[in-house]
Amino acid sequence: MTVRTITCTGEAVAPYLADLARLRTTVFRDYPYLYEGSADYENEYLTAYARSPRSVFVLALDGDAVVGASTGIPLLDDQPAFQAPFREKGFALDEVFYFGESVLLHGYRGQGLGHRFFDEREAHARRLGGFALTAFCAVERAEDDPRKPAGYRPNDAFWIKRGYRRQDDLFSTLEWKELGDAAASPHLLRFWLRPLEG
Image (cartoon, rainbow, N blue to C red; front, side, top):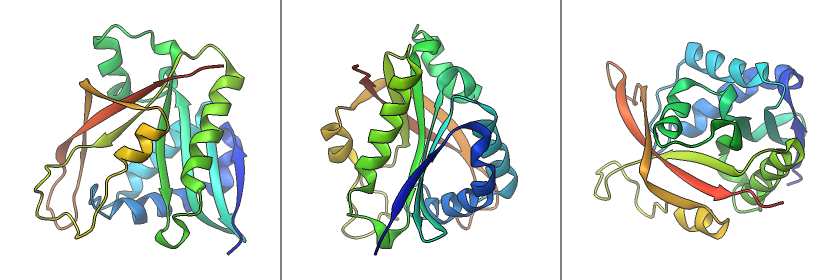
């Protein structure tokens, strides 16, 4: 299985946006997100990234098929929902580079692509300059959530190895429709931060 990665910035990602929307919807259907998927939201979310000339998209390709993707954007260029917790805690928003998602189809996991996604996004933030922190957030689920699959392992250990630290006072709330639900509901997401060394 030969997978190559490419990096796009800003509007250069346009040819891949439909593939990215499908990939996000497919991967986020799984626990812990249980995301029903919304074409309108995907279009709005990804278009905002593409509009920022300082955004980054790291794509994993098997032939011409997009099998994984990872995104990043200066926090100042992102949605208010992600900015608000940092603003409330007194962070300098222009010093934070925010990582969107890393999504990878099951058959391609365990090959080091997760590390590659972080390496490339961190390197992009360093090249841009002026950023003191990288950050991302992940949905919170109860330890005893009955929907958790047998053998499920969260990514916490991986993130800690990468130098990220979970924050106990930095959260955002986003609404999405879970599988089988009639309407969208709010979900709590916890932020993880890491100083961006040179």
